[in-house]
Image (cartoon, rainbow, N blue to C red):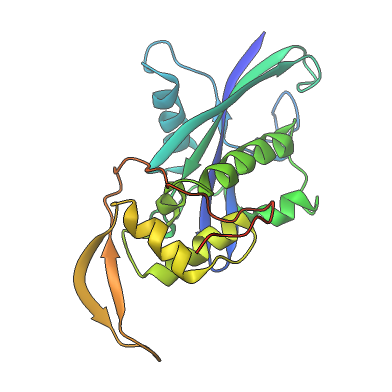
Length: 229
């Protein structure tokens, strides 16, 4: 049986969510030259865990090291690979834009919407794997600080709110968002203020290795519930 690891690595660029894709070699046994999620096999000699294998594969294929990785699902069937029964362990990974530049010529950042509208078909069942990872991110964004790993380590709250809105696909109430984020205790006030058109904006900082915190109430998600003020 074919057994692999596939990773949905995401970043925010401008005002869109992007996924990292890797182009399969022209001599690949299946889907030659097609774009796919970066994936590979576990090395019994080098990998002590699935997460370590995921990090190694991303480093080899894209030269990137995300700040956050989590296992999403294990998918296996006879249809996903033309060469027979196959199984993959799907991971979700998040990276800051400033740390996301890949020097590998066979990698490419693509808007998630371009995959969803089939402007760019993916190999195997990778479009379905992408949807599973996006669903996990969107669900956890409604009740946790997970999208913080898509932000720069120093940021303004409106910038972070915009990241949440891109992930969730809908606007958020400003005051409710601030209350949930600040009450989570993951942001440190740097003492720096930047004057804009209105009141000075506070610059906050977070540590890239901080744990994901849960909110006491959910934010508005794609389902359209109202946010409590």
